[in-house]
Length: 173
Image (tube, rainbow, N blue to C red):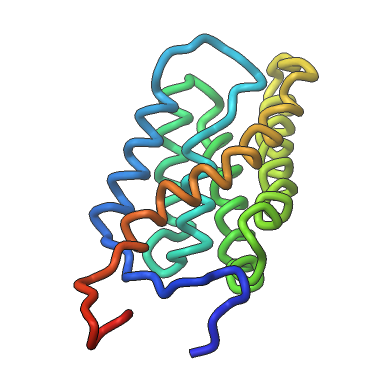
């Protein structure tokens, strides 16, 4: 197998229970009542995009729609606002996942920044078309914070896959 340039180690398969645990943990962080802050990064969106890029067959557009509806119900937002944004974001992430893995993690953060900007833009457009108020220009900081979280999330979520399965002198991998 040809290894991407950015990876220096073979990764173990991702445990599906760990994938869904991290998604529900990110949903839990999004559910913490911190007030309405337009610049607050959407941790669930970052984790969804991460797993869409790294495990597109296990976490797809359907999971993004489900989590989007849950966020809509929690936020009291227009039903479908987050669902549409998460679905489009996941579709783009799955479409670019092969190309994205060839880049280093900081370069990946720059590559996913437009995805986060587009997701927030779609959510804002839906909110404004439904007669909502403009949340303020601080909303433009949220995708930047999400892109800055990408390296942290990458290190944290790939850590269980980086451990050696039982290395010895006869099995170095």
